[in-house]
Amino acid sequence: PPPFTGVWMGDSKLCAIGVHCGNHITSHGLALNCCTDLTWFDHIVPCGLEGKGVTSLSHELGQHVAVNHVLELFLDSFQEVFDCALVSSEDPG
Image 1 (cartoon, rainbow, N blue to C red):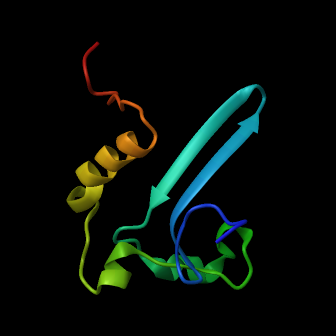
Image 2 (cartoon, rainbow, N blue to C red):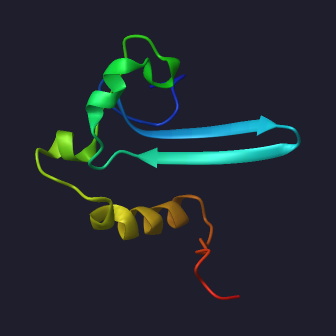
């Protein structure tokens, strides 16, 4: 929900998106929680948002969802939504 970035399931963040600018360098980041150990978030205020939680695909679906189960679908959707082509650092050339 605005003004919060990312993908949310109720009051819990499923996917974090961020941009950091500093020293003439821009960094972009994206984190999709697939089978993340959510107990680590009990020790912090995730994304600095009081009263908000963090969730994962595994938690929401009630079954183990590994990164390799969603990676190809996620990358395909990312390319479609952002009208771009992703290039792996492992690709030659």
